[in-house]
Length: 115
Image 1 (cartoon, rainbow, N blue to C red):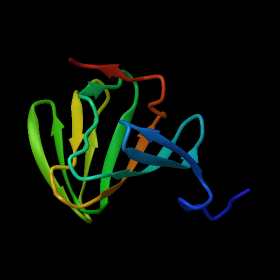
Image 2 (image 1 turned 90 degrees about the vertical axis):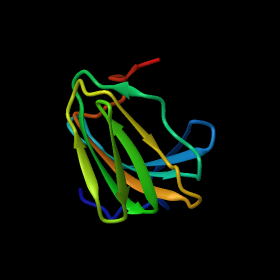
Image 3 (image 1 turned 180 degrees about the vertical axis):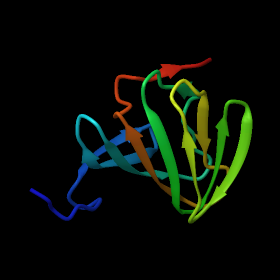
């Protein structure tokens, strides 16, 4: 059954000690997460064996490193990251970053951290 979802009624989790995520859609084939990334916060550089992802900026500015290429993104822009592609998201601005991360299949349990 379909229902209207938002950060108010979705499962919440924290990552990186200061960042928030909300599972807006979570099925065996699709994950849609809204994330809030404070100024200066970042995820670790990693890749996924099976999951491909799309990062879409709702608010703020992001720096997304994809296979060694650094991309700057602002609200209304997005980037597709293929499976087996190293990447790292950073908020290098002084404002909060709000993004959507869409993964298929879901990336949980399919994350290899790169040092």
